[in-house]
Every structure is written in structure tokens, then in C-alpha cells.
Image (cartoon, rainbow, N blue to C red):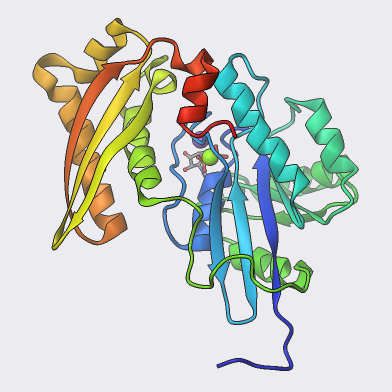
Length: 298
Ligand code: GDP
Ligand code: K
Ligand code: MG
């Protein structure tokens, strides 16, 4: 039921910060669904992903973004364009840092945050790893670094103080009608979550450059009664990577498939059949046509 005398609030709340500080973990905590994949490796998140939290009188449109890095190849430049766009349309910025973090990997980004005209919530994450003395020292340090920002110590992983931050976000949101239908959870199609789930398993099980050289394309997503049938291609940059990915008698690839299927069955709440194969797509990471095709450039 509508409450006619309460104004509706809506806006874009964009999470930015260095790699691995916990941005995707926080986004999932807010949304209550695993929209963003999480691993201990940097560059896990490659896209800007929207997670929408709807309430009767509000719509919070969260953006998870890749960690801020200095781009070394074209894919990484495209990733940083997603971060830049997150600065441009934000109503509220969530700048996330982690306990013990000091180095500013990109001064220009930091200056932008410092001089931001929109509200910045400075989220000091992973406080579950700090004792009282370290926490106090860090709070003081970060408040000095960004005097205008409103600092909130949190633990995204153990959900500590996350609810308070969310309530503060709602207070700060501008009055606006919703931007998306109120039953919508994200801007991404189902195939995107299939691709990301597979990529998460590859990040988990392969070392060195393999995870950074893969891109996933889901060619088939057939929703039948009681089952979803999925066929996805894993693209690598070189033949040598193909062999590593598949493994002895296909064992390594099979493990990826089994684990991805389990996660996707939970995500879609339905039985899933998944078929994976590997293809070489030479140097796709530096090829702007390929990058466009995979949704990294507009
Ligand atoms: P992102 O790269 O900023 O998106 O970071 P992720 O969300 O992928 O998390 C990076 C790593 O930090 C993962 O291993 C997370 O489990 C871990 N992590 C995230 N939040 C917390 C936290 O509050 N406490 C601790 N101890 N670990 C966290
Ligand atoms: K990560
Ligand atoms: Mg991430």
C-alpha cells in the first residue's frame, strides 16, 4: 500500500576503492544476493554491476566497480572507464578502504574523492581483523586523509555496521521517483551471472595469468520445465592456456563445471545442466572489437 504523504527517494550509490578492499562483498551484503563474484584476487570484478535494493519509499541503485588500477592493457582501460562513469552519475559515493591500507594507487582518483561535491561515505572495512588500538589509529588516519567524508568502520564480511550505513544512505538519498521497476534486482541478464560464476571458479582454481586471460560467453541458456540447460565457451588467449584449462583427461575443466553448476542451481533455484568448452581467441584482451563484443566498451 502507498503512503501518500511520504516522498519517494531514489538514487545511484557507487562503490569505489582499491582492489580487494571488499567492494563486491559489501554490494552483495546490501542486496542479499550474490550478484558480484568475490575472490581474494585483484581484478575479480571487471564490469560495473548494478544491484538494486527496493523499499516501499526508496530505491537504492548500487554500483559495484572494478578496483582502481593503472591500466596495462586495453581490457584494464575499459575497466577504469567503468570506474570513471561511477564518479559521474553518483548521488552518493561509497569510498571503501581496508584496515592497514595506506598507499594511494591513483592520486588523481583520490583527489577527485577529496574534492567531491556529492556526499562521500568513507567505509573503513575489515575491522574484524583489527584490535581496538589499530582501529582507533586507522580511524584517525583516514579522517585526516578525507576530512570532509563521513567515516563508518564496517565489516562487510561479517555484516557489521552494514545496516547502519544502509540507513544513512537512505537518509542522504535525493527525492526522486524510481529509475527501475520496483521488482528489478539488477541490470544484468541471466547469462551474465552464468559467465561470472564460471569465471569465479577459474579465478579460484588456476594460477598466474590464466584467470586474467579468460573470457566466458554463454551461447545457450534454455529454461525448460524443471531444468536450465546452459552451454558456455571459455575463451583463452593462447593454445598453451587451453591445455592447462582443460587439464589431464578434462579433470580440471570438469571441476569448474561441477562447482559452477552447484552455485547456479542455488542462484536460479532450479536444476542446472552445464556444458563447457574451451576456445582460443587470440589476444582478445587487447582487441577493441572483441572487448566491445564482450560488453566492456560502449
Ligand atoms: P573487491 O575486490 O573490493 O570487490 O573485494 P572482494 O569483495 O572481492 O573481497 C576481497 C577479499 O576480501 C575476499 O577474500 C573477501 O572475502 C575479503 N573480505 C571482504 N570483506 C571483508 C571483511 O569485512 N573482513 C575480512 N576479514 N575480509 C573481507
Ligand atoms: K577481489
Ligand atoms: Mg570486486
